[in-house]
Length: 257
Image 1 (cartoon, rainbow, N blue to C red):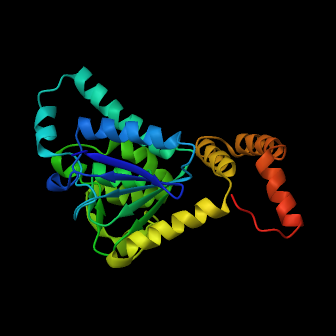
Image 2 (spheres, rainbow, N blue to C red):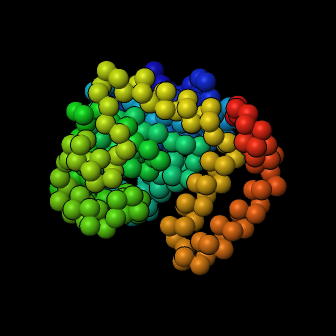
């Protein structure tokens, strides 16, 4: 049985956590395989949207018990190498040139919540709970803090990371952590329809460049952002996708991306 499933259908890459008996808990093996799969999906010519989802009742419960026990015996170098595994996974998701959608149908806790956090968009069923519980076991939510503060701001980030409290899907949406709450019996169809709409109505090149700008803008001054934005704006006007889009718009023609 594969711990990570991957298939492509209608220009959507489906990446599925497949460790339901362990509540899709994370360990070095699953993190490495998930990173490899994202890198494959990120470079797949047919894929325009990636959906990250999970089999079973839990999206991901974070680190598994055997993994946590192992950490107690690790050297500093072992722990640094291990931390870099998760860092590489988060970067592969966050900087993906595709639109990445998390489909959360069960609880997303600690590292599992981190997986959802670094995706572009999050759909959740009403039953799901979200939380970064690391401080409750003497750990810290180090890597995810870099992304969460960008997603929901400092005040809410402090509230969630310093308490380790779980919040429900409606609260997560109010905080800006997730985008949509959909009933469990409708969420799979809703996510696929949303992904298909993006695949059909947007330019892959435009998505890639827009995401690059957004990542850059998080770390640049306003003037730096505007300089790079102006340069990219000028550059993209000479591309085939832009010419195709403008021609279709001027001729009132429907585009088929």
